[in-house]
Length: 184
Image 1: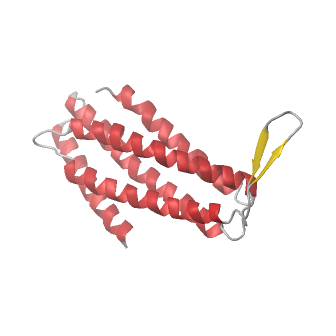
Image 2: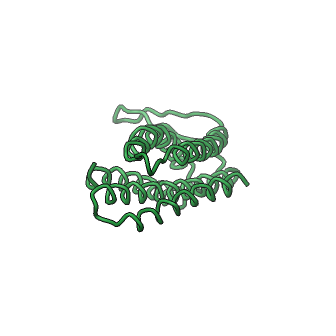
Image 3: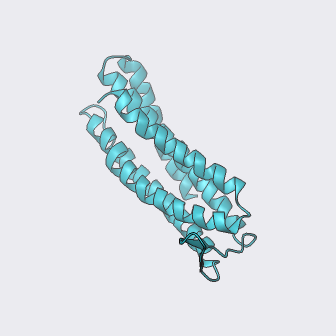
């Protein structure tokens, strides 16, 4: 496994999170855009579950060896991510529940536009929760991806074992701290 194989996945994931955070902050008072962003975020969650659980955690699991295992951290992180997605879906449900009615208009150019009716003032807390959860997700995945890259470098003898061991122990501690912090 080479670093340049996993880096594009990591970059795409981070770019998607940054884009969603930026859009939710910028368009939090536009009901049509808010509806579109809610749907886009649902798609992101579906994509992320596949990408994270199959690709990123698969890579980390494959990098485990007899001396350095990631099973506990993978399981804990999956629980945290599932909770993050659950929180986000609850907020998305609230945002989309405020859609009073669906309107579709057929315009002169023969295609339909969906217009959302969302009370944007009423859903600002949920918008902020989504932004916060996206930030937590990015930070968590950043730590995992850093560990993947360090493990790849360690297996390629690009870093010394004592450096890797220190980072490995820090990673395990950070995941435990993250889990404790997220449960509070």
